[in-house]
Amino acid sequence: MNRRKIVAGNWKMNTDLHEALSLASAIRDNSKSITGVEKIIFPPFTFLSALNEVTKDEKSLAIGGQNCSEHEKGAYTGETAASMLRSVGCEYVLVGHSERRTYFSETSAQLISKIKIALQNNLKIIFCFGEQLSERKSNKHFETVKLQLEEVLTSFPKEEILNLVLAYEPVWAIGTGETATPEQAQEMHAFIRKTLTGIFSKEIADQMPILYGGSCNAQNARDLFACPDVDGGLIGGASLKAEDFCIIMKSFS
Ligand code: PGA
Image (cartoon, rainbow, N blue to C red; front, side):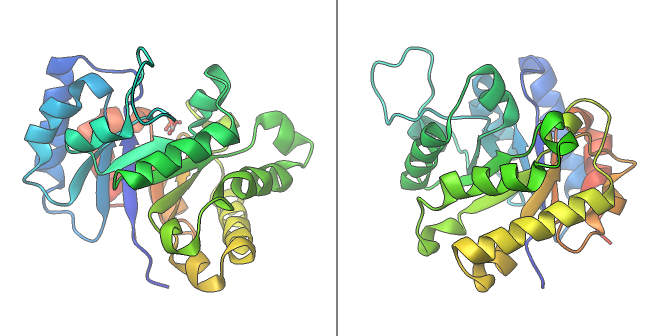
C-alpha cells in the first residue's frame, strides 16, 4: 500500500524568535531536494506568522499549531482558536499530545471539540495517543490505545476522517531516549490499523497515515520507518536540529 509519508517536528516550548527563524530557514533549505515526504513543523504559536513568511514558497513544508482551543472564539483568555491558526498560514494542528493530556488534563470530549473546530477551519489534524509505562507493564497497552481511538474517532464520519493523521506515541518513549523497538512499533501500528478497520473500513485503514513518535532520531528512524505500518514520525527533540531532522526525512527506504 502506497500511503503518504510524513515527517513532522514538534518544537514544543523551545526556541526564541531568532532561533525559530534560523531553524525554519535551515530546515527549508536543507530539505528542498527531499521529495516523496510531507514535511511539517509545529513551532510555538508566537512565531507562526513569521515562520509562514519563511516557509510559504516551499510547498512541501507546512506549518501547524501545537494545540488549539476547543471553542470557536470569545472570552477565553490565553487560548488560540483554530481560525487564528488558519489565518496565519497553518495547514495542521496537533491534537491530543500526551503533554496536553497529562499537564492540562485534556479529555477525549475536549479533543473531539478541538478536532471538530479544526476541521471546520480547513485544518488537518495530527491526532496523538499512546499508553503510559504502567499500562504497557501491565499488558494493557492495546486496550488503552483502542479506547483512546474509539472515544474520539467514532465522533467523525468516514468522509472527514482522512483529514486526520494518527501519531502513536508511547508516553514512556517521549523525551526519554527510550524508543519503542521497530517490533513494538509495528505490532502496535498493525493493531491501530485493525482498530480503524473495525471503526471505519479496511479502505480507510489502509489509507490512513500512522506516525510513530517518542525518541525517534537520526539514528533509529530508518529501522522504524522500514516497518510496513509505520508511515513516518512525529519528532520532538531531534526536530530542533535542522540536520538531524532532515536525515530523518531521508530515512524511508
Ligand atoms: P521526542 O518527542 O521525540 O522528544 O521524544 C516526541 C513528541 O513528543 O512528539
